[in-house]
Length: 368
Image 1 (spheres, rainbow, N blue to C red):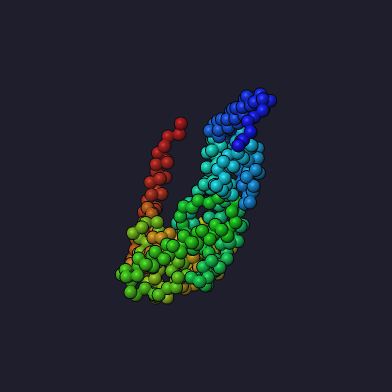
Image 2: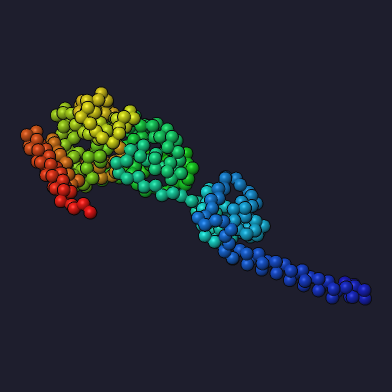
């Protein structure tokens, strides 16, 4: 049997009860304040936003201090209590960008879901690795030197194209989302991975497709090289299989390809291209000079898109050996040199007439 409380003990009971109620009320009030902070948007950084980089292995206490120091949250202590409350969720490493007032709960969600800051990089069809490197550096994704160092090593495609001089041609044109300050090798890996996906898809789609039976059999490297020539010569979709056919027809007859973009690429590699292709450049001794050397150049001269790769895999079954630009983005194709020369003369007359018309319009303007 329990002993009854003494008369003195009975006097203390009301006081203890009051103290317990006060303590509970204080805790409830404190939690209400913390809850209010968690649900209240806050921003103490300048317009334009702030970047917060969280390295791998950073303790949550350090993350909370970083967020307070950069003005993302009002109180590191309050954010630590939020981390404790949601202790079953991890905060992910990476670089984050905050540009609006957000509640600590919203900030926590951003970090726990790994919504890191990324940069959109769009690589158009026909860009070279030098073009891509310049864009990556301009957007702070990686340095030009770091990307080119990775792109100059063909190790990533050694199984597919063991004789490739670089990754040129295998850096697939697409839109990418990259974090800032990445290693150049990581960027190159992502682009080559996209190339492999497209290549596998095209091989599967073209396995039973009709092609040009007289076209020479090309290795993967030669096919991608051919696709890069097609990409640089025309942007008209329906012309790509025709251009591919012209080049494969000339390869079959052991004719020189006479492709200006290959000469330009060789000059770019040598640091000698100034934006204009001169007649003297067509006599430069270079493995990329397809006026002087038969066959395809040693490797791709740009990064072709899926349509040009498809055209190189399945050239049109036509007997064209020549084409000339019409001046409006398209080309005229011909079978014989005589026909080609007539097309060239027609194009030059057209250009001369356009120049005369432009001069006449200029002369007709009145000087104020």
